[in-house]
Amino acid sequence: MRAAVVTEFNQPWQIKDVPDPRPAPGQVIIRVRASGMCASDLAAHQGYLPVRTPFVAGHEPAGEIVEVGAGVTDLKVGDRVGVSWHQKGCGRCDACQSGHSHDCQTMQTWMNVGGGNSELMIAWASGCSLIPDGVSFEEAAPIFCAGYTSMSGLSNANPKPGERVAVLGVGGLGHLALQFAKALGLPTIAITAQSNKKKELQELGADEVLVAGADIGKELMALGGADIILSTTSDPKQVASAFMGLRSGGRFVNLGLVHGPILIDSAALMFPARSLIGSSQDERSDLHEALKLVAAGKVKPMLETYPLDKVNDVRDRLAAGKVRYRAVLQHGAA
Ligand SMILES: [Zn+2]
Ligand SMILES: [Zn+2]
Image (tube, rainbow, N blue to C red; front, side, top):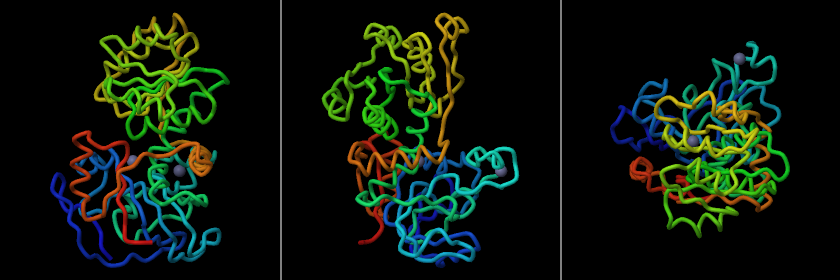
């Protein structure tokens, strides 16, 4: 099969033929149809993740099961599935035993079994979710990372009816976070640095658009403040500033890999009381809910699609911040 192989960090990925994978007990083989890319792929490319070369990246894959390994009884050949980052816990630690295998410190991920930038991939059956009818592979792929992350963020903020949700940084994650909040009937505010994105953000579901200036917190408060901020920014100054735009009881949910420590004054946490929450891809039910909202037509991932051969161009485009809003590699014809 053909695969995009990372042979050396910071070097072009090589499209080449590699042996077809075989499933171990508990695993499945998926014919990959679409595979999303995000900043995690840049981290893998640059050697920041615990994975050794050579490897195949791709942690937002969607496709059809073509073979099931021994002991797999709940998935069948022909099933349309996607695979999330964490696929299988150790089964024995506190996290696994309490039903939170996404927090297992020795979980199996694409880094253990190989990613989805290939014609065929291995996945643990426990890491696969069925893609609802009517959702294309291309639309489904980013839901297994960006959609999952943003829905977990919203869910971890425990939104109450009528609470105002602001999304700071409307890119791959943020454009889905905004749509999820809107789909759940919550008033939404998109915070962007680019004034020319205003109309586009309104079309995505923003009730209000805040074009950020020098003091996001103050500017957000001038709009009435937010009960929840879903933040995807990597800028620690933006985080600290936006935090001040939370109303009493407000929750700031950090979804981005922030470059450096987040500096928030203790008084800002206490007067009024506000919370800072870290969140990634948490309960599996968040992923399921995200997929259902896409199937219902209430959330639509905005995509750029490319053939697998263009993987290096896509990665460069991602690094340059040019992707609107998510890049997905398409593998072969259906
Ligand atoms: Zn991702
Ligand atoms: Zn475990």
